[in-house]
Length: 286
Ligand SMILES: NC(=O)c1ccc[n+]([C@@H]2O[C@H](COP(=O)([O-])OP(=O)(O)OC[C@H]3O[C@@H](n4cnc5c(N)ncnc54)[C@H](O)[C@@H]3O)[C@@H](O)[C@H]2O)c1
Image 1 (cartoon, protein in one colour):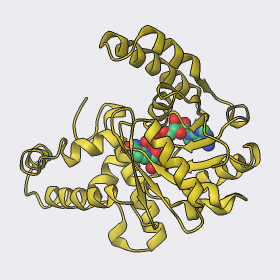
Image 2 (cartoon, protein in one colour; image 1 turned 180 degrees about the vertical axis):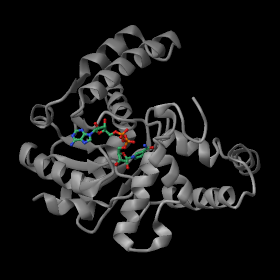
Image 3 (tube, rainbow, N blue to C red; image 1 turned 135 degrees about the vertical axis):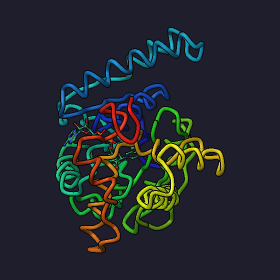
Image 4 (tube, rainbow, N blue to C red; image 1 turned 180 degrees about the horizontal axis):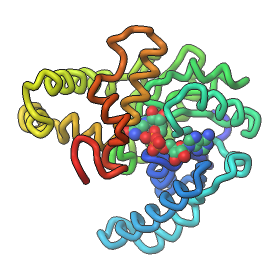
């Protein structure tokens, strides 16, 4: 099945990227995580140190396993250096098509010809990104969930341009990451999980805007009544209200449908910089 995947490079060390990289290194892959922002790299590297130390403290990993994981994990800021040996690149940068097109164009030039170029995008399907490269059969959605070190699902989306070999390789990598792959046979906006999630979130924002119940009470209702592990507003704070804003704007720009615009509450929070847990305030204070 072609070159086996041994080297993984993760582009972006934000919310998702740094945890995907740590997960890959723990699972035995030679891993590089890069970000254009030096502060993000420093934060990611500090988090890796404290996370791995906590695995020893909890008896989940031995000192030797942690030392081996650290030896497999590098944090860098130079794209060219980070991808030259990559068998698989997982892009986890800002959710903007034009930025992703630029990065995939560069990746196509810099990576070996066998390298699979995956995007962790939650909504942008790979058929929109593949034209930036000369290897459309190897450009694919590989969608992790937040927090990536904990959540075990990965959605793999077989766009019409994606080869069976690429999908089979990503399924195998996902299993090696101790996660569960789900293959979507066709591209669809939001894939499976986010379509389900968006429906709940839309209704939660609607109920809030109608003044039916508070943020806290809607979250409690969903947790206690539907058995969800977390309420829709708690989850928005975790995944980032800025992300919800950009996702809504991308969808609106794509469809031209007013109903796809982010809700007034999301626009308000976005403009105030209340983006959720990462900035200390969203629907809740941290
Ligand atoms: N946040 C979530 O819950 C979640 C879940 C699943 C998938 N995703 C997807 O993952 C991607 C990343 O989301 P996030 O929440 O981790 O974003 P984030 O804003 O936390 O992190 C993005 C990182 O990418 C870096 N970056 C931006 N442009 C870059 C470039 N050209 N080269 C190198 N680094 C660059 C930024 O400096 C930042 O550190 C998005 O496509 C999003 O749709 C997010």
